[in-house]
Length: 292
Image (cartoon, rainbow, N blue to C red):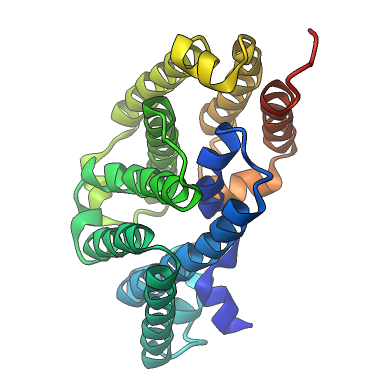
């Protein structure tokens, strides 16, 4: 169980972004493409887990002082450092070998993702602003990988919105780190020295505004409407606005801006809005004769 905890399978939900290009292409039920994406999902998850292990290995002493991270296996001492590194090596060997067999270009994206996050773990995460941009780029790479495996064109709008959404959530997480540091008096991470509440509040508001404008522009774009054969995509903006405002409420009202993944797992409001957003897109894209 402690080895499974080390892999952080709960974080694998992030790799669902691989399926977005196929979903928005209106070809989600193509068995061949969907099978490749399922394989890609697990290979990307193994790569991400190998990075988590390396990151936990390097931060195990700092994590031991963190109110939440202290329970991670390497920080708590339930898994030996050598065992963690060995597990990470096995995971990356399996994922890179499997990805090359699956699709060479997907393999190249996975190698770049691994190298970028390795650099993040070994120092880039200590540079304010750069750290959140690297996190956002990681989500863009997931979408790029999904487009390659599904062999579908990738809209610049989808790239932009995924990047902005990931940046928005990363800034929210940094705000939570600043609050924890202020409350505990313990330096949680070096990059926090480059942030304060005023800067993060302004940055979150700025990125939030750009996300909402970009999404509306996406839904009314003639190119997107023509490709998806629907002029009603702007209906889905309702759920995007609700989801973003709920996340802002959690950040500014409830001061609950921790791990975005954990927030999605436990916040019923966000879960319902996300499901409604997916269903609305499904009806507009996949049920062509829908009359509204």
